[in-house]
Image 1 (cartoon, chains in turn green, orange):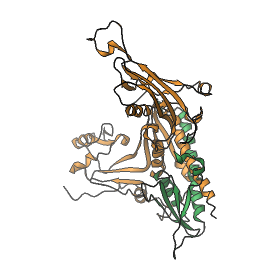
Image 2 (cartoon, each protein chain N blue to C red):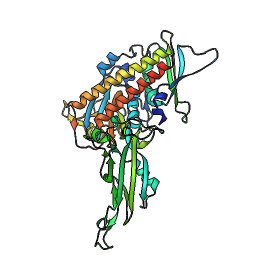
Image 3 (cartoon, one colour):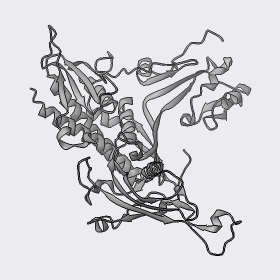
Image 4 (cartoon, rainbow over the protein chains, first blue to last red):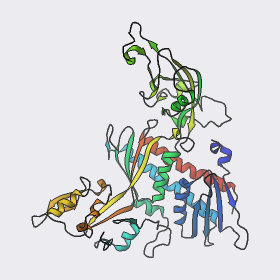
Length: 120
Length: 354
């Protein structure tokens, strides 16, 4: 339950450093995100990949025993990787708010059949 | 096995659009499944993220809803969005469940830990939004803990002979979830007046007692998510399937039409009379198809039909376990996704990059 702790919630991202001649700069880096898995990784990869300035984005979970997800973003230089990440998160929030509003609207409408119970 | 099987894209559709938007269901395999949505994949189609364009083609249609389940269609989203929603429903929507079990007396044949495990799995109906998380070092307060009591003694009804079956001879021979009594603490009685806290169902069998055995248990319930322990998961099952499609490539008439209709589940294919008075097979409702590909077992139909699935049309089926009703559950699931993104954003800002 320590994942719920507020302090840990807000400091969960760090950078995975890669040294050498292809050292990361602010246009490409690998974020190590604690306490996340495919639930966020999949949707982030999709949304950030939709950004035309992003050349590469992908995620993996380095080891199942560690609750860490590595997320890598490489951009074409016009925006920073962190900006691409931020935009991706904002896009997901926007999309989710719309989906939630649609669902609430439908649930309070009459377009469907309310049954006492049904076989799945 | 005839090896001249070739998947045919139906002639009357836009070829590139078919390749971009459909999964090919062939006789022996399912192909064209990989994600092709990253920006820049297609020459003729601009795939960048555009909320307004997405909003125009997005649809959410609730098909039916009952007290414990909902079936709805999510149209116009990518598979990763549907999968994330599914994973959140199963593992990340918080509910209340019994966590600490203080056993003052247990003379039944069921061991303490087995009994405690069973109590934890009982779904509780409680307004989760009014409770906060309780960490391992936090003291129990009325804002993060629910106290429940279970006090049952099994006794012999006076005057009944031993030859009678247990159900008639004993009181409280079976302990049900309705025997769990909520003990409101602090402000809980007024806070939850409209929605008293109780197990979601009255008739869950907890254990069975024999004459003279008793249970005297105090339980603390707290908020948790399915990722931590499956008892916190609000859904029995949350799954989706992708909308199937059937394209008939050439007219199928007469007896072949009847055989064709029978290779699919009932209701998928209907027989109509065509212009020449023959029985012809037409697709009635592809949604009912379970995509068993049974029709492709018949050699005469291999060139007559193309099966596919629409990549962005998901038929969700969510069955709750009783602690939450389906409509608030879905709203909570969307909210959980939004909160996860906002918290990640806060973490990203704390990282202090340019």
